[in-house]
Amino acid sequence: MNDDRTIGDTGRQPSVEERALRREELTAITFVEIVDTLVDDFDVIEVLTVLTARTVELLAASAAGILLADEHGHLRVMAASSEKIQLLELFQLQNDEGPCLDSYRTGTVVAHPTLGPDSPWPRFAAESVASGYPSVCAIPMRFKERVLGCLNLFISRPVALPPTDVALAQALADVASIAVVQDQATRLAAVREGNLQHALTSRISIEQAKGMVAEYARVDMDQAFARLRQFARNHNRGLTEVAQSLATGELVIESVAGPRRPRTVPPGPAS
Image (tube, rainbow, N blue to C red; front, side, top):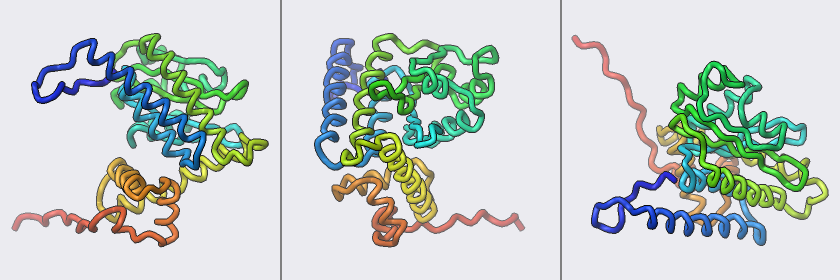
C-alpha cells in the first residue's frame, strides 16, 4: 500500500497496525463509494477514475489504468491515474501486445514482475520499463461470463503484486464492472452495445474538455483533468456533463480552468 503519511503532528511514520487499519477503512469506503452508484444517477467515467485512484492508494501499485471494450470488442482507454499511464495504455493498444490485451482475451489475471526482452510483450515491456514500471499486473473486469475490459496495475519496482493485493484488485474490478453495466439501466438489454459505447462517448468528451482547459490555462493534461473533476465535485455535477457543457459553450471556460495564463515567450538572443 502506498501510504507514507505521518500520524498527527508527531512526524512519525505509521505503524504496521495503523497502516492496516487505514487500508481496511479505505477499502470499505471505496466499496461503498462504488456501490452507491448502483442506486442513483452517476458518471461512469468518474467511477472508473475513482477506481484507478483508489487502487493506487490501497495496493502496492504505483499507477493504474482501465480499458473497456466497445461494441466491436476493441479495447479503449477509459481512465488512467496519470497522463503517462494513458499514453502507455495507448501504446499497448497500438502495438496489439501487452498484459491487458491478454487478460481481456483470456478472462484471467495476467502478471509479469520483471519485464524485459524475454517477456511475452517485448515492445510493451521496453516502453513500460522506460516509463518507470518494470512490473505489471492486469485484472479482468467481468460481468457474469462476459469480460468487459481490464484494470491494469503498474509497479515501480521489479516485484510481483502480493496475492492479497491481487484478490482485492479483482474484487474492486468486479464491483466496478457492475457499476459499468448499470450505467443507464433502462438499456439492460443492450449492456455491451449501449453502456460501453456510452462510456466511450463520455471519455471522448472528457478528452476534448481536458484539451480546452490545458490550452486556456497553459497547464498540463493531468492538471487540466484535476480542474475538471474539482469543478464537477464543487458544483455537484457529473464529469461528462461538465465536459459536454464546455464543448457547447454552455460553461464559460474560465469558470473551470481559472484565469488565462499568458503564453510564455522565450527570451531573444543576447545582444
